[in-house]
Image (tube, rainbow, N blue to C red):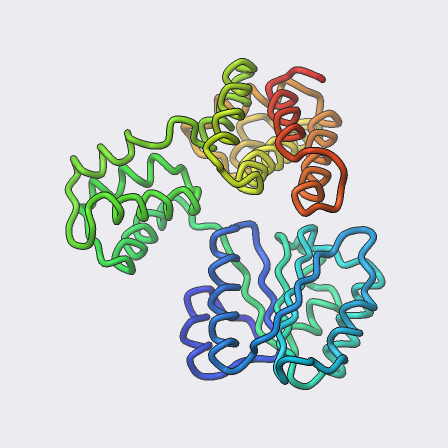
Length: 336
């Protein structure tokens, strides 16, 4: 059964499904949806949790063996399955269908994966999950709904702001929900609960971290190698999580790959940028970045993100921050 993200909390207060399938390209919504499900499960007595990361070398027998094994510590167990690519492959399709046909008792399966294409939504494994569990498609919040989303986020943290102040935040984050959530948390830390003014919001936004992740993305797109190197070092020194930096860079690279591919197929750059949902005030910087490399090269740069992800997880050799440095410089148009 499919439900909206906004309906999930209400559903969880009534019952727990044996399977939850979360899919989309909004990391914040996916994280919060998974957190809500896990919290409800813990409240219901699910004390043990096993996490599985699916890549090309993943053995699907591990999932089935863990699902059928007896726990030494708790009768109820959460199986947390991550499929970043959204493509489980032939073995994964069979394993997921088998799981849905014979759901092991005392297990709760949470599947998180990237955005599905049209064909994947109609696939046998997705239909099997839909038949036995809850499917949540995590759609992006568009420009028109973003101020409302920020307002609701503020109210959930017991603060309010004038419409003009909320629009300032919306313009600053340009559709990035993680950045919007961080701006709201910063307001809570600076001013506490209650009402905040336009001036306070302006001061908070202007006082963003010196080396912020989104500034790094812009420096890379603008080809400013010196600034990329300086900001990358600053982020590492400040203790920013490498996975957050990777997410921000990979998100932009995926957009560029989509635009470059559409242009290669004959679509005008304006139409390609619109199709990729690039914000108006970012069309020039993204359009210029697209021309730095041919589409094939941008696809190769995107592939580097997968290797860095494995490095962060300890599944590939090398230093994650060193590879992130190379990724940022490559985005800027320089080969190492």
